[in-house]
Length: 309
Ligand SMILES: NC(=O)c1ccc[n+]([C@@H]2O[C@H](COP(=O)([O-])OP(=O)(O)OC[C@H]3O[C@@H](n4cnc5c(N)ncnc54)[C@H](O)[C@@H]3O)[C@@H](O)[C@H]2O)c1
Image 1: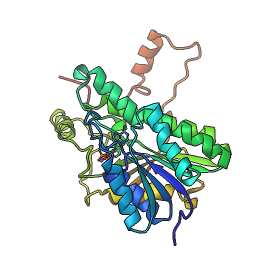
Image 2 (image 1 turned 60 degrees about the vertical axis):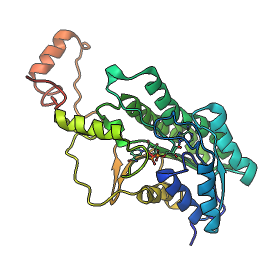
Image 3 (image 1 turned 120 degrees about the horizontal axis):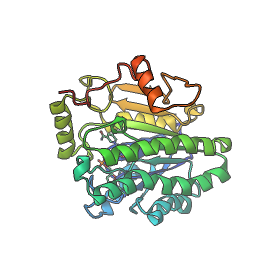
């Protein structure tokens, strides 16, 4: 049984790894797919190669599916709109948008260049604005649609990844909000935080950020010890979650945040106030001193980033 027969999907950055697996599975499930990929690399400065997207589209067609390759950079307004327009021009509609394109430019904050920041924002955050805005216009007219944006566990906090964390966590707020904007039109939007080994964004610099975190004894990503993975996390595992979120079986799921790594998937809760204190006359410095002595609001919250020596 094909779960997405007749649907039209756009996947950005689908020329390799996670995006490629998403495009392949969408096609296997009957969707007609626009395989978008600039044919660049993980740093955002490697140029372009149109053959990458076309090769994946050809692979899909060879397997009996329907797909076209499309090679614009979604980091520009024209490029993001062109990826969506390719679906309209070729297949007449867009039902599914998977924003997967992303890059990494790790650096400790004092050494991070404007280019590190701006490129990361353009590709890993603003691209989803361009594609979602363009797709939303069509989805609203159709009164249906499913969007999946690609965040990262790095958004929880990751040494040396201030630009990427900001972009990816920005995408979470963006996703929660467009889920509200578009819900009345039957359109859903969710965010995933994938982990996949052996892909492009796992650059040598990422290994350095992991080594630095270990050297400093600070938690990597979540504020909990990292479990040893029980298996190699593959793009296909990520694709299964993403494609499932685009099916009718997930029609009740929107504005949510999921983590997936190999055999483990988790629903990440919305932030909540876990300790609340009311000061009847409003808060002052003295009132905060008093509060600190009570060992409630500020009690036992020192973490391992704080230098104590
Ligand atoms: N691999 C992981 O463990 C991991 C972890 C967390 C988040 N992610 C996120 O998952 C997504 C995919 O990761 P991956 O490791 O498969 O990446 P990858 O680098 O292997 O592939 C990404 C693809 O996006 C394309 N791309 C880059 N800039 C583009 C642009 N401006 N327009 C169109 N295409 C562009 C690249 O050419 C590349 O083919 C990214 O958003 C990444 O940040 C990955």
